[in-house]
Length: 475
Ligand SMILES: [Zn+2]
Image (cartoon, rainbow, N blue to C red; front, side, top):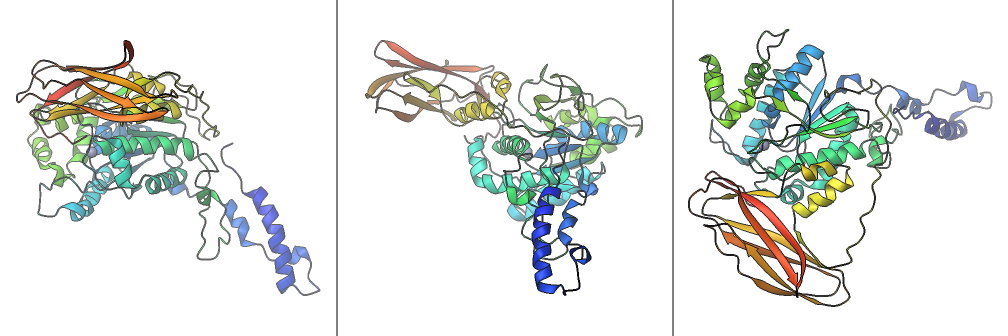
């Protein structure tokens, strides 16, 4: 059973406490059985049921939940599932479509808007981590700016408090489209919390019995370790990556209990995000033409929710229903076992961070399938430039000379060939750059970078690029 009892620890400490108390307060006429009940046993009370969740949603910004709201409405209204939501930031780096308030002031507004949005579905257990909204495509920038360790501590605590069966979170991966680094960071943190919350050695102060439950100023938390059973991802890429990778749920289907579509329930939740342009959705609802809107946000309200299977601790296939295999009392914690990668024996060319981070992250968390979900791809602004991080890894005991050559598509700036010397047992970091055309070219723009050591190839890196005329976050 997952509910690790405090009774064993209680009996040891209770015994010690009882002896101490007898020394301090007992008269010679008293016996051990007359000693007052030690408050320490109050640690064995059941966790507070008000915070138990079936689904814990972990996203980055107020309004990100919109990507799954119609599914949440289905589970709440038809299946009576309990849902809690965690936001990594308050969305303080966007712009305000209602008033002059911006930055931290707007973050305070967006917290209220988010609580109102999910509150319309009956969700009241809502938390905000201490992350700061970070405009970037590189997940490592967001993790740094959020305070990765502090936010993970906070999120593991919330998982242990809410004891979810299922975590739904944003994809920890690099895609074109709305490839916000904060979205990726939410998925990274949720994945780490999925693997840590059941481990009594992780953030142990959270799962330590409280020293004096009847007294103030306790410095441990009295939570229990908790292993969620499943984790699913969702994303908002410029192309469909979800097909066949998880269950899908219609938004146009009408709720038998609410008598409107799940998409309309999602739209009615979304209209609370007024600083993020939700007033046009309210107008569309009022004028009965929601389905006619072409804006990307509006499609989210009418298109199906497409989930990507991450991991399951219980028997479940990739496209099964989210709750397939879930058992009422939960599942036991198990350390994830993975085989170590053999160290490199020959020099190699690799793509650098953030892609090299994901290569390691997916393996570490048993998510190798995500490596095959999306090819290496990137969005670049028209008139901007591609700046691609690369690594040459030299495991040899001697220095090596490496020639780099890049092939750019027609219309892009030429990537000049270059030569570098890499010391023995050294990782060498470099970038290749290519200027983007001034007008948008349709379709994927394919780049190839290759490295030669004398006549011998030590690797080729490919990346496909999508040109955008809109705003593109820096890498
Ligand atoms: Zn967002």
